[in-house]
Picture: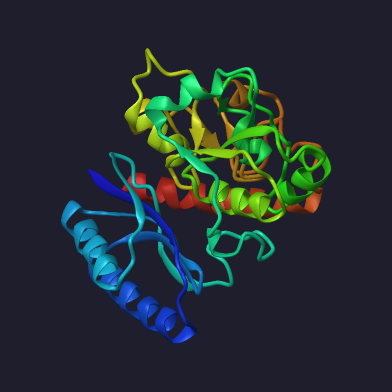
Length: 296
């Protein structure tokens, strides 16, 4: 069983401190066989990692010792969520064109237990901050999908679709909460007055609200080998198309446009013949290695 730790915190640090923290976090993670991705910046830290229960506890304690006070979420999985360890320094812990810097001016947090009652109010505009390929497999009913390809696209959506009325009540949600903190900070910085967000994101909601009482419809896309999660962080029914990295289900796999490791109905008319051929060669190597292991 793999223990999973998801965490982030916005805080102000100097470059020297960030560099030293990276070295300590990488060494501790490597020595304890922890896998996943951790991003450090002068504006904070963001990551999701997995390992044994003891190793994850060691890393969590190290981050506390380094002075981080992260928003953390634990879960477990029988499936190995990550294949490698990456610890890196970037300009931002979540890319947003340096807007909403350090998320110091966030919207009002709504607890998962209060979320459904809150968004049922008729004067609330509910917005999904995630990208379009995440929203297609699950969402809160009646939420607005901005149809973005990247998080930075959400800036244009704010400026073009929402800025005309900065007094409207807007409730936002994303996977773990970090994108909403950045977006809500930017929105308040430019004059929005009534911004609310789901505390801890969809993952927190799915872990704290009973399925029979919750309004969430579908599954939640996650950026690791699990692909999607259901209530109580149970692994969902989706896989990734390794051609376009979009989630696919059994119906997609039955399509004439599905080719393992190459294409799916989402990308059959998007990728070039050259891209498909490269993917086809890569899949052939994977199949060869897989068959060789099975024959041993």
